Amino acid sequence: MYEKPLPIVDPGTEFFWREAKAHRLTIPQCQDCGKHHFYPRALCPHCFSDRLEWTQISGKGTVYSYTVARKPAGPAFLPDVPYVIALVDLAEGPRMMSNVMTASPDSVRIGDAVEITFDDVTPEVSLPKFRLVREAG
Amino acid sequence: MAKMREPVIVGVADAPLEKGMLKGGGSVLQMQAWAAKAALAEAGMTPRDVDGLLIAGMWGVPGPGLLPSVTFGEYLGIRPRYADTTNIGGSAFEAHVAHASMAIEKGYCDVALITYGSTQKSERSRSLGGRPPVLTMQFENTWGIPQPVGGYAMAAMRHMHEFGTTSAQLAEIAVATRKWAALNPAATMRGPMSIDDVLNSAMVADPLHLLDCCLVTDGGGAVVMTSAENARAHGVKNPVHVRGYGEAHSHWSIGAMPDLARLTSAEMSGGTALQMAGVKHEDFDVVEVYDSFTITVLMTLEALGFCKPGEGGRFVSGQRTAPGGEFPLNTNGGGLSYGHPGMYGIFLLIEAVRQLRGECGPRQVPDCELALVHGTGGTLSSGATCILARS
Image (cartoon, rainbow over all chains, first blue to last red):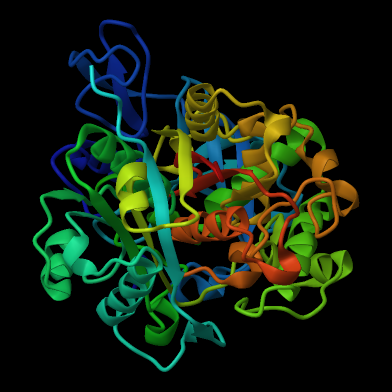
């Protein structure tokens, strides 16, 4: 039984989560200015165009900043302590919060290269997370 | 053209706390009614005089707190003709002073009452889990980020990475603030504390230790504003003048903060307020800024221009912000040691007014004529600045 918070999906985000379920990281890209953005919005936050298309991206990025949670965000996260929450600068530009999955949370540093991995937490939901490239393989 | 009516603060009050909880107990509405009566009494006024009501809080949502001025107006027994429930987080009350100033200048109201109340500690309603992962928070709370400390921790991590800021420098702020609290009988935590105590306290979210974090307490307060003319008519001897104000917000989710090592909202609101007041940084006798976490203070001082970006660590070192130091800061003991009820901003205003009126006893800053107050809300999201003067 998964007791951590699950995304309360809405019409603006449903496609993102459906793609994540299929282990694809897919975010909006503006057809006018060409920039990607995250989280998904109705208008491009760079140029305010509504000509947006869902685009699968590489899943590669670097750690912009992070913290190691020593106290859990509620009881459901207690078994995970200490765990890493990071802001990842995706290769395509946007910044995305997620977890860096590692057995050594104290080793994570700003600038670390990371890549996408999907955590199938329930039959319906897969959460996009990251792992350190140096630990992959 | 008629001369603009000048806005002044004529009354302040805060609810007495005992061990961080409302002394004698009470509901969040009672607490605000008592504070309102006390603040109005300072100006020889009663709720009957109030025609503008400004309020923000986290109470009663969902439910009556969704319409807080409507609810509290009824509770108080008044029918305001001006209401403002702007809620941009803990900085809301500095924005309320700005909005009330404009309303008073314009003649849209004569007496504005700003109130806040929280019984979060009595109710044990605070948790690190935050709110449900709905709308934008689908992309935050799902990952187990402790709210709000996780976002501030990421900012601190980035600030350290870019500028070499250290945990010991952040601890300087907590220690200096505790020294001010020791001089304030109303403060919750008054015992001695060293930099090592901060560094040795439990890590909550790297790099922030427990003693880098504000307290979790109850708290309530009220601020009364009117025109200088009306203040004179009520025989107010010590009105505090509002010389400048500004507000801004830059993001909600920490992932959307433009630059985690720079407090964009404070750069914006501070710039607006300083320009309006026409004063220089060295003119301020006391500075009261939001201290949800030590990093909040450091980034605020940089953003407001008291030092350059990245120099905050050196600026606060050597206990420069402690009693007797060159830069009196957070003189009531701050959110770090006085109390932090969730949205702390109103207490910055209350302390600045008391300093300008010379009422602060052992912690009084000598010849205090000009104060800067800056609130921060959300996750380094919003900022609002007020510049207050004795004359």
